[in-house]
Image 1 (cartoon, protein in one colour):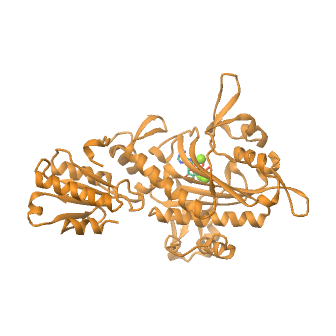
Image 2 (cartoon, helix red, strand yellow):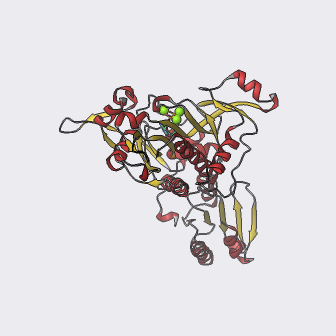
Image 3 (cartoon, protein in one colour):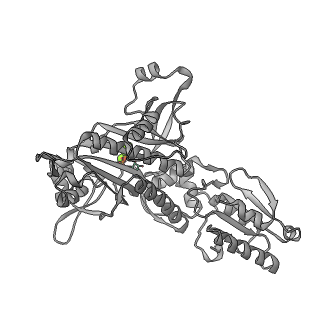
Length: 440
Ligand code: ATP
Ligand code: MG
Ligand code: MG
Ligand code: MG
């Protein structure tokens, strides 16, 4: 992509409405534009990152055997009356009527609708287990939308739902979600800690939240310092192997890690040696629930068992805050100059800066580097504008691409370009071919 043909409306000034770094940087880097309180247009650069994250979420969910589908954002109030949540949900639910005076709502979550889909088609244990998920916009009329996409009103969420015959099967589904979430966050370059949490309006008794440690997080967290060191790494996971999956969950949830809602000072002090005790703040980027038959019973989602009985199906629901993750990623990866994208989620893999636009040899070298990067399957952003070098560097630093290739007549005279790492700030001179080969 040539920057002269792209749409990247960067801001020079710090927007006054932004209180935290990620919000400020997303506005300045031209990633989002607020349209109403907590409602954002995703400009091309922000949309690119959003799609990258969604892609990772899809890949890891499908790897775990979960099946994507897409439900509408608008739902009928009647469905929510069946579960009793239409009245219980309160003012966070956006409600309205259509022209025929039918009560509708913009879905804040989808337990009712997915249960309705399930009961329409499935009536036998033979069709179990099944786990369905979507990535779709949600709306919650948050009382205090703030911090940009971190607490929006309209936000993009992955929500998955498992349907199983037995509690044991449903707990395996719960564990599968935990492991697939750990892998998802790790691929994004994030450490998200599963913490014992409170179930809130979804209901149920088995639940973990995933928290990214950050000073600007809204939750207070209490944990053993050894927990954030745990890594899934490259180990092979067989999602059908119950023992292996349960073993990984145990590994990640045995040491103390809880949010303020479930924190117990006595247990904390008994279990965690003083030198390992940590109190901090975190951003909730996901949550998994096992809630058994809460919705299936209320809504009549029953299946026949092998011995001919009819039982309500065992369920759980599992969410990842895809749009919030962008805020969390930037909170964890930035400096005073701008964003520093981890390689797994960067909107472009590398930026090319032409130091002398209009100089035919420099232009030709940039074009050929651009072509070589594209041929290598990479997505470069070439700053081909007629701008000062300082301004081009500032834009690249702000939008945070992991690598920058700087091309100018002086280097070309010695057959070198400069390759700079955004994270370390270190530059190295090398041939154009070597620079292309270094970028992953
Ligand atoms: P919070 O405690 O921050 O209000 P929640 O517990 O109400 O979040 P869940 O119902 O668990 O949210 O939804 C799953 C995920 O969706 C959350 O873990 C979070 O990452 C994301 N999410 C929830 N509310 C918002 C929001 N208003 N804006 C952006 N993302 C959100
Ligand atoms: Mg909430
Ligand atoms: Mg919460
Ligand atoms: Mg939650």
